[in-house]
Image 1 (cartoon, helix red, strand yellow):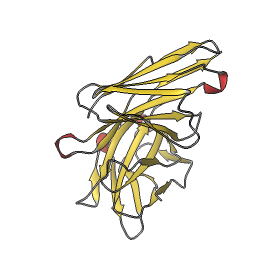
Image 2: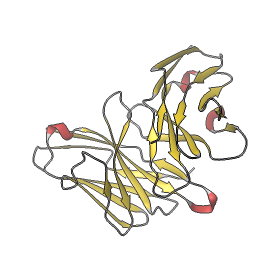
Image 3: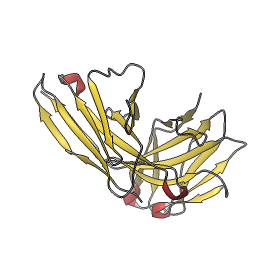
Image 4: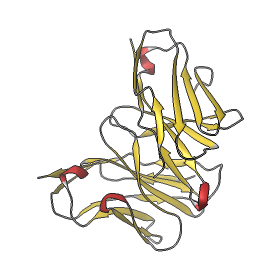
Length: 117
Length: 115
């Protein structure tokens, strides 16, 4: 299957700093990528849909000024957690949608564990 | 509105026995159905999907799932479980083949295979 990478795999930062997480589709182009947040022992919560060349679409309750999303190319989307606080600590997972060659499947990155001290 | 339900938080099976992880869905249009597996501290791995065609879908690692329209179910199955199958399994649904539709995940079922 297609491969999606995330970087970094884990990050620890101080409260008040900003953290950028990268998501790349390695062997396909993705006009649409998604960012999810997962709390321990819970399902994935969709935060936003990232569209290449346009603004991201945020889910209700997700602060767009806090979680900045940029989808500058067909293989890269970034999520920046601005002015991070301990409650932002979580497992962040990105996903890229592959619609090439008659398929339509979302592939997921390995996730980024963010810990805010 | 679309939704997906996984009624079992945990399923315990002995190695070598068949396993079933249940999933039911609700959509207004035609469903796209997916199963993903998540190992500890990892992202989700795609197992299989149903879009159209045969109701029995075969996927990775020997898993298969059967689409049942009348029961609105898409249960995941495997004839003979392995200890390495122990993980968290998510069923997901998307309503119609639309770039605007979103994939919705179930709450997850933890599968535990005992030796």
